[in-house]
Each structure stands twice: as structure tokens, then as C-alpha cells.
Length: 412
Ligand code: CLF
Ligand code: SF4
Image (cartoon, rainbow, N blue to C red):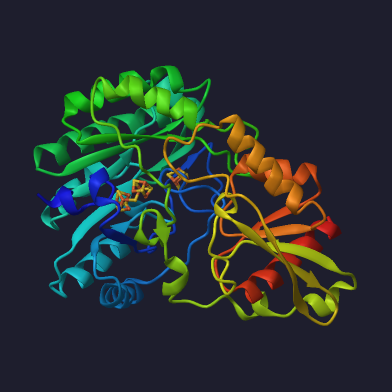
């Protein structure tokens, strides 16, 4: 059974098998109210993450590179950074180029489902057996509050008309895929006050359609999106909803809301090690010379070379002093890791205490440079005047980028 080697479809496989995403699909054909298109598609990824975009040829080269270095690579997925089917030509070409290599690999794809009636047959012909569709509602009145615009066959639809079109195409596409042997996973973004009460109904319908598993995900409000001021759905609320829906059908509980260029085990992203493109030269410019003041920046890094650790996973912060001549590592501050990343993450008091301690440990800093940090964490740091800068590359490049962000913020 192929799903036994798919880390997302089988919780037992996620510690053993790795997946890689090919970030070949930058465009999107809809506009979700929780999305800021500067970032990866929120239907699959956390907001605030930006992936590199590759041509099919580069994606194929990257596949070979990763395959040579990660023995247990079992899945190649296309999950944005926009919508895989809104970029069908490059999506198909990337899959064909990799298929031609004849490797033993499972193909996977994630989509908002709008274009499924057009491409479901081709997906089946291509032999793609794992497809994720994000279905947030069945009721167009709810959809009208989630989708700002739906672009279809050269026309733009808004409100109930746009949502109706989305839902109709999703249901038609899912039914076709299931009938043709595809294992369909459904992502559902839970937005409190909009679709939360309706989710059990969505899950029930998905079960009737023969879907394999549903994955209820939290809304993490993306800065700059229409929902940026909405509350983040807590993992406690998500787990309660999963428990309720588990009575209907199997629930995914180990999703990591991956980047569109994620590589490795779900719990250990190695995308930093497999970049096909370098940061643009202007981003690499050593900006410290221009700032005319000193900054103190806390960095989360596993080994001190790369910005490759989540804020909540840090057990120490590297404190850099940035003056008009150089970046200097002046101190290492130990803290207790406050987040294990477990799906059972429960916003407990002890966790809250450790989070406060982490914030206090860097209270004198101007910024924190980290691979990822949740929206609430960012807000809490801002209350202490600390700017969060998310980045994925070397510490040195990251510090330049952080200075760029700090000086821009100052100018505003
Ligand atoms: Fe990628 Fe998605 Fe395929 Fe997995 S991710 S396209 S099904 S190979 Fe997995 Fe990542 Fe969660 Fe997605 S943990 S975001 S569910
Ligand atoms: Fe953004 Fe929605 Fe498009 Fe994903 S499907 S890229 S969340 S607009």
C-alpha cells in the first residue's frame, strides 16, 4: 500500500519517510480572505513563509539532488506557493520530467480544487494517487465570507456566486478522483465564527464521497490579509474539533503546515540545505554600514550557521551586536524550549510560563531572527518592542535581511 510510505497519509510513516515539495506553481486563481499572496498558499502552509520558485527543469534537478542525499525520500509533492492546478503546464511538466527518471517515488499534489473538473482526468492519467483539496465549507453563504474572488474561465466571481462555483467544482472533482482510485485528503482551515460550527457537516460529506482522511488546520492570521485581525485558532480548539470529527472519519493530527519548498521529514525541515537559487545580490549587501546605530539581534539556530530553528524550539538565543562595521556574536542565552511541536500542543500554563521566559531573555534586543514564529508570538514580542524577522538561510545573510527590515520599519 502506497499510503504506508506517505508521511502525511500515515502517521506511523512520518518519522520514517521524507517528502519534498517542488515549488513550481506561483500563481493562484482565487483570493482567500486569509491569504496574503506574498507568502505561500495558506491552505497548506503557515503564513509568513516565502518559498523559492523553480522551473520544471530546475525542479527535476532538485529532485535528483535530494533523492541522492535523502535515502528515505518517498514522496514528491506540489503544494504551491500558489495553486498547483492554476499553473497546470508547469505542474504537469515537472511531474513528467521526474517520472521519466523512473525512480520509485509517490507523487502528491495539493489544490484549492477550482480547476479539478478540467484536470482531474489528466491527474489520474499521470498516475497521481494522492491529492489534497482544501474544502472549507459546503454552504456558499459561508464561502462568500472566506473567498474574496474566484477567477474562472476568464471571468471573476465574488460573493455567493464565486463560492458556489468553488464548492460545485470541488465536489465534482473529488467525486471523480475517488471513483478513479485517488486517495483524497481534505484540508479544512478552521476560522472561528465563520466555518467552525459547519466543519462536522463538511467532514460528513467528505466521508460520503469516499475521501481517505481530513486535516483540520488552524487559521493563523496572515499579516496583510483580510483576516489579519482574526483570532488564531488554538490547537486546543483544533484538537476538540478533530475529536468530534473523528467519530465520522479518520483525522490527520500530525500536519506541520509545510513550506511550498519543504524537504525532509515532516518534523525536520531541511529546505535550507537544498536551495536551487541564492538570495538576490541586493539582499546580501552588508547593510550594517548604512544604519548609523547599533542593534542587538537574537538569532535561533541549531548550529550557529543557519537560521534553521523555530522560535518555540530554541534552547538558546545567539545574541549579535550589529554596529557600523560588523556583526559580532556577543553572547549565548540559554532558555527552556517552550514548544515541542506536538499536535497535542495545548497552550498550557507551563508552556505560557516558558514562552514568557523566552521573551524576557531577549527583552533588550531590537529583533529576533528566526526560521518561524507564530502570529501570537510575534505580537507578544512587538509589545516589548521586538521585531520578528522570519528567514531561512545563513545567519550572516539573515542578519543583513533583519537590518533591512529594521531600517525599513524605522523609515515608516
Ligand atoms: Fe506535501 Fe501535502 Fe502531499 Fe504532504 S504536505 S502536498 S499531502 S506531501 Fe503534509 Fe505538510 Fe500537512 Fe501538507 S504535513 S502541510 S498535510
Ligand atoms: Fe492564497 Fe487561497 Fe490561493 Fe492558497 S488558494 S494561494 S490561500 S488565495
